[in-house]
Image (cartoon, rainbow, N blue to C red):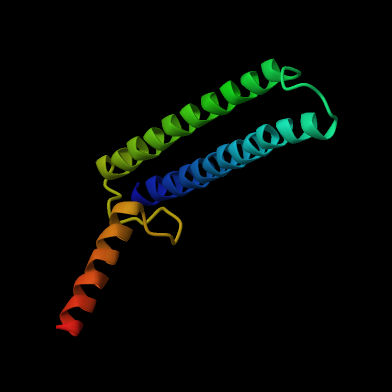
Length: 119
């Protein structure tokens, strides 16, 4: 039964990471579009009022995407809790990157070590 849980968790993790990458890619592409809109207007020698509604709508779309990303991060955290509830706490299911709290702790540890050596 543990093996089935582990396989299910690994498949879930792959799908989660793919969704996270997709939303990040979509946010990046939307930001690129929004950044280009005023450039295109200027290059076409159009008044600043031209296309304002389109820029506003695109910015709202970006805002909704960022909100969706926040929900996906919450989903990620809930799935980690679920992983622990089904007895897979020891199973590492992430990328090789450290999560921010771990990274911050490691940086603080390095600062302390540098201070100790300097003293």
